[in-house]
Length: 309
Ligand SMILES: NC(=O)c1ccc[n+]([C@@H]2O[C@H](COP(=O)([O-])OP(=O)(O)OC[C@H]3O[C@@H](n4cnc5c(N)ncnc54)[C@H](OP(=O)(O)O)[C@@H]3O)[C@@H](O)[C@H]2O)c1
Image 1 (tube, rainbow, N blue to C red):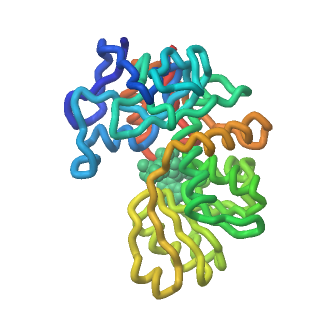
Image 2 (cartoon, helix red, strand yellow):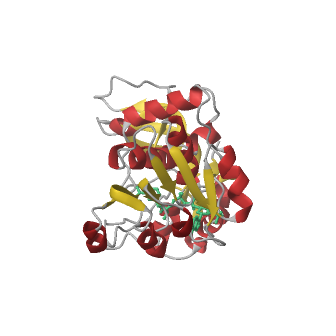
Image 3 (cartoon, rainbow, N blue to C red):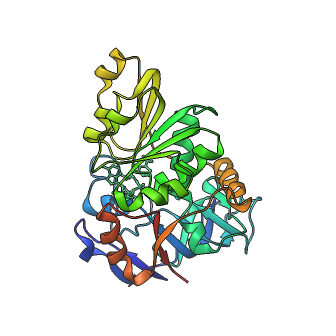
């Protein structure tokens, strides 16, 4: 099969379009024919070697951990999927990914694709959508009527987080740069703060939940806006634990999981028109290096997707 592979850590130039063996599913796995693959920051982080010391990376590695496609083959234990089912998933990032014509995924990581959108749009959903969902509702415990501050609201995770939080009847404040202010408001945010021009900590207070998709100084300053007993959930490194404890704030980092129930909920919200994936750019598989370079610039509006078929 055709696949983008890396044989070493490095810059975008290590991404090579090659022939690779088509993988075969074990008893508890499915083989998915990939129609489209979402691009996420984790793709270039792993390519650059950020996974070193966290999990072993075997070369050649196929990057990409977001897929929409069709079941091609099922393992001997699988009863809930069959050939031809349209599915989407965030496969486990410690294994070969989705910049390829086929990918093997544990059946417990797969959900039925939203029916109302095509494969390119569906491939933009699993990783970012699951992350936003689990950050807000599992780790963040967001309740209707609460106030949530979402950093990087215009990005892959942020665009889903704003829409999910609004659907859950929260008061939503986002941070974005000037060119994305109206865009984030259109997604449903009640307020959007231009993080380049204004200090969010001067404008916001008594927040129940901060979703931190940026880290560093942004995470540290966020402690000032949370109310006593508030929560800060981050997708990057959780820091400032001592200061948070003194303020009775819960700070937690987490790794999103490909939970089929969450995938189903998200698919229902999309099919009922309440949530829509936002795509900045669709590129062909062979343009994976260009896609990762764009992602690495850190200013994607919504998602970048690779079209495989
Ligand atoms: N732990 C997990 O399971 C998990 C899962 C998903 C993602 N992540 C991580 O979470 C982070 C966000 O992921 P993503 O996919 O949403 O990234 P992304 O799509 O690349 O984010 C791009 C967005 O970030 C905004 N941005 C950049 N700097 C900002 C700042 N200082 N304040 C506010 N907004 C800022 C940009 O908005 P402007 O253009 O307006 O500046 C842009 O829209 C990444 O580090 C990723 O690796 C972790």
